[in-house]
Length: 137
Length: 137
DNA sequence: GACGGATGCGTGGATATACACATATTAAAG
DNA sequence: CTTTAATATGTGTATATCCACGCATCCGTC
Image (cartoon, rainbow over the protein chains, first blue to last red):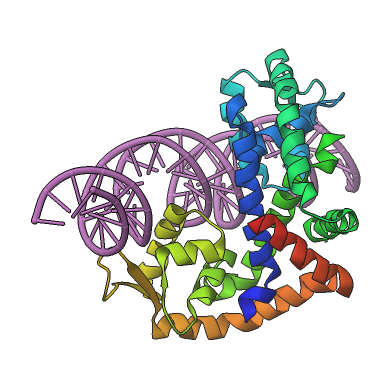
């Protein structure tokens, strides 16, 4: 059976399932799984560009642009012009965004631990490297 | 860094990346990765219900309903009423759907081989089981 | 310093995704 | 046989996702 050997289907299926689990975990703080990932990736010293953020998240550049909108509207981040290059936008967490992140981290921890617990320690490491190979191969 | 230990982000990232690769592979036959998976799952003796199909694909039931529309419009599948239960719909591949599937399989094989080749044999097995655990844990 | 290519980003369109809610049908309880 | 619960599915809304295309800005070369 092809379906059972299809890496794409397997990963998509796992992706949707784990996405729903993390969505559940973040629901009480008003985030979903990729919004948390997005905010988390912004929590860094030097602000990312749109392209940089898209690369971190492994998603299309234009998707990232559109995904920033609702978070910007909620005042969780700001999109600023770069000082040196007028083409470049810098995405910066606001204080509200940082605060929400602090609130969300324990929920992330719980969800991530729960999923990790269903895997062997050794498998977890291999899984990480395999996923990395697939994402950037 | 939380992002680097986040299973959810890792899987989402890999999922988007592998989705794009399979989309590329199927572009010449006018399918995308999940449409192929959907048609593939319909290629079976006894027709699936909407719920059954959704479960196979690990996606929301209502998403499945809506995803069927474009494929139905293209005449690749039919949505029939069940003989015994008026609530139930049975999704059946048409001849056109089956023919397109035959055409698409070599492209699937190539794409799947290419991704598999970037992984160790042993890792591949573990990856499959880990993904299964995540999808159905 | 003009200009062709490269780079960073946005928009429009088609469709994907999931949740809340609604409907129709069947099964179960009394 | 009526009432109630369970099941299978559809709709509306909000947003996600990618592609094709376009615009603005920068850079290297002449």
